[in-house]
Length: 531
Image (cartoon, rainbow, N blue to C red; front, side, top):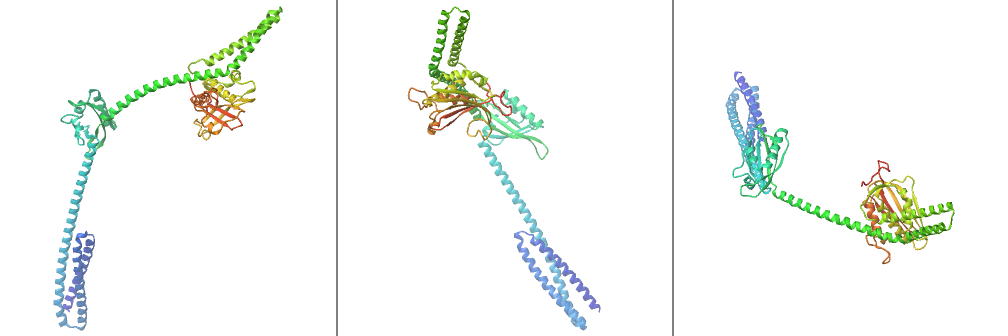
């Protein structure tokens, strides 16, 4: 029985060792699975060891089964024979444990080796990447003609270098080592700019962005630009870091551009002056042409006035009645006054002068327009002037407006072959954004002045060119082609435009659109050119 008890203790010990061995094997399997590729040979070894353990376990189970059978059969002799085998199994398990401990040590060393090589490789790659980035930055600075600068506002330490050595050399044989030395290398008038910019950067955090000049000994003047900003380094120190760039070429280009702009401005002013003179001459020519058109009508009016004056003067010489004489004198004076007004209007219309923009109500000029336009028409043409009540005023030059309307009236007269009617209409118009698409005017309130005629109309292919200077459909000697070009030029110069609606055989309608004066139109919609 003592032998049996001893066997039982040995069996328990073996089982405990087996469980311990199994636990260690499982732990080793987890460790092996986490190993990198180069640890695969250790995993193979573990598999072999596992096979040996399984084989030993099978032996143990066979021994245990035999022991139980022998115990049941009370065969001490067989049990005694089994004891050496059990002892050998114990020795095998102890050897296996030692082997497992050695394998664990080897795996740990392999892991440490892999981690060490991985860290070293990462460090090598990082250093290579840093060197590559530094090389790229240095090349970029060289090609950009720039160098780096670092300034510590607390210690006044300054580092200038890297990038283009040509830029670094502009500060002298030895680069400045503090901000004061840096400023002393600049042109005196630029030193305060750099000093103020550095001061604002360190006190308020503003970016440094300043341009200054340097003139190295025996060399030309250079323009440099310093740009940078304040940063806080890991050690807690404050640094202003940035770049110094050569902007000499840009400054030279700016100078050339400024000179070119000045030259262009001067030439433009001269050209503008010449253009204004040419426009004034052209306008005066148009006025003279228009005066020629109305000359016959004016001559007819003067003939009527002279007849009134002559007849009343003859009757005055023949009568002794004082009341009759007073009436005749009054008629003479009235005819004389009307002749004076007509002469004054002609002189004012034909007189060259500067443009005088004023707020104008077309209704106030109804009588003057009737005389001006009526004198340009034949006797078989009827002129109607229809002005909408409460018509908004416009801001234009009165003479230019009258000339534009006279040109439209003459154009309408020539379009009507025989008897006919010409109608001038004026009305208020409101244009929204959708209404002004393609009209070259802004949305707002406008006064529309239309000239209708019952003439022959204009063919579509002619309508496309009707406003071109010197384009005319009239016979040679009957028109210069400048009338309608003056009309559209007048409208555009005053913020408006001219529209044409015509059908061959059914007459034409020319519409001048002029912005309404803000004093007359609703304030939320109005627009008006100022003098």
